[in-house]
Image (cartoon, rainbow, N blue to C red; front, side):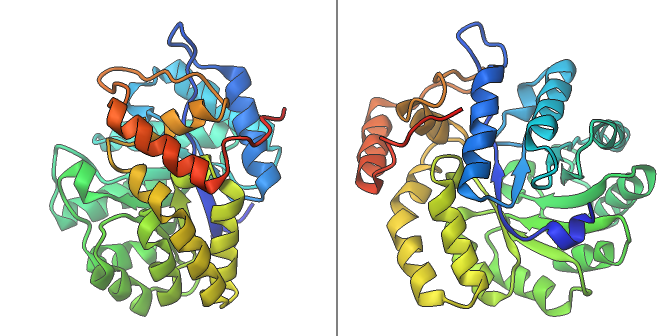
Length: 302
């Protein structure tokens, strides 16, 4: 699958369901994949930030990526979270993701190290040149402590192994600088649900969404409408979902969205330390939001 051609629409940054024993809940994971595909999402992204990839053991990471690839069955691209602040480590993950059948990897900017712009370029170039997996850069300064500048992204966009970027800087001027000068075929995805409609209106190609874990059809419909130029209709859905988007970032991701999925009966509400359950006040807010959206009664399915 040519990832550049497929990197469009709604990609769900999938949560990783855990059971009471803290192990990966395979049944809930399978159901989540089918829930997303039945709703028409265009991409699946396991083992990223939302998937608590930082606390997955290597064998668990392989198990989740492999299971999502198998369950998706080629219906949509699977892009595995495969970032590291060690370039050598990121290369190992990217190579293994390709072996497991993933169509690409989502690779976060090195965290804690805080490389300069030349370091960012060298890091992502090394990953792209060392692996068969297409690379989607993930720029999220709020998590990593440093920002990948537009100029660096545009330089990386010229490399054949770099398919696109998930832009979560929250800086629309930076996004516009990338969109204005990006080479043909380089995809730009929103990394912030609440800014997705604005980015699509500016010319972005899609989103890697947290909210779509719980509302995949509604979020996907908004994105498809926007991509079709039906902005007024997309805007109506955007404002309908905005309370859930905002509540989903009212505590550290994925705490709120996992609480919502548990309310929907889709998985047990289990986190791995250092993440802990939401406060009673946030839980009440989340329940009110999802009741208003009417998604609590959705059938769990397969």
